Amino acid sequence: MNERIRKLCSQAISDVDGIQNPDTQNMYIPDCFAEKFAELIVADCLDVVAMRIYLGPVEMCRQECKALASEIKEHFGVEE
Image 1 (cartoon, rainbow, N blue to C red):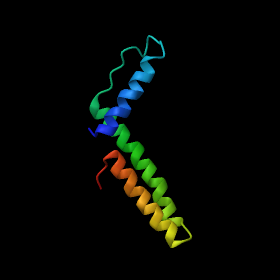
Image 2: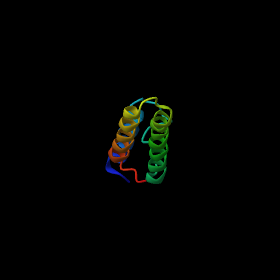
Image 3: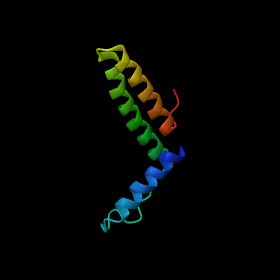
């Protein structure tokens, strides 16, 4: 699992464990679920950027959106 995804998952579990709800105390999320969930969120973000690329009125906007999509992929360690 990508280190950034692992940190975000740990943070989410810690935040939920701190709610003092017996249903969420000491929650465990399998790595395979956390990784897939994160990949789906990143893919959804990239879809939003992709819509800007194809609907953007100006070529400069398209180039900026492509750069943003690449940055998001790199940040989350998502491969093409």
